Image 1 (cartoon, rainbow, N blue to C red):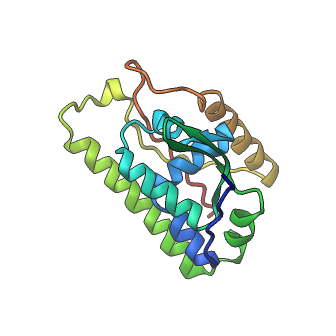
Image 2: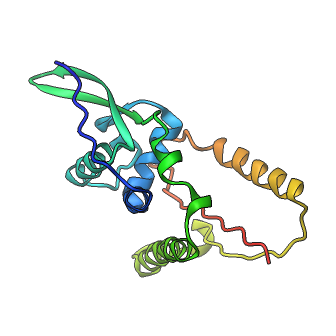
Image 3: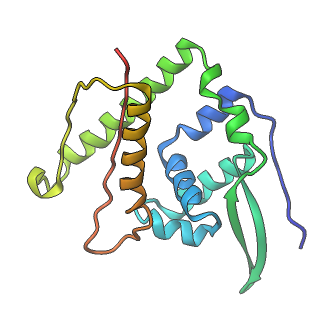
Length: 185
């Protein structure tokens, strides 16, 4: 069966809107680190996302050309698709933050903050609030850094995150959201 590629023409703003959805961001983050996965494999990394919801978001990412089908296999009367992030530069060329207007930056920063607030509210309203055990923290540190020192710091943070990025969900592991914002004053 030949691979099908239904890609709609997207603008930079459309691509950002597609990517800015929290579930689609998580799908992309999973595919960026794992390279190629089936929807079933993706669901193992996102166990809190309903299967129908996951399929809908994967379809949206495929339609936008942000991810692509790299392989199809017939399996028990269905077709298993393997997905990967598009390597045609769609994300980099269509979503170039250097070309975003100030209003676009503000809009997407607000969306980022809004998602943090939604996640925090869900945590605070939850039945099992244990701030010490859960490691809840929010801090701000003002430090003087040269451009090189900032790059070194961001590289160190990335290395620490990458050390744990391959962790699979288990009974002992809790999904934790780690966010960072760097603003020069």
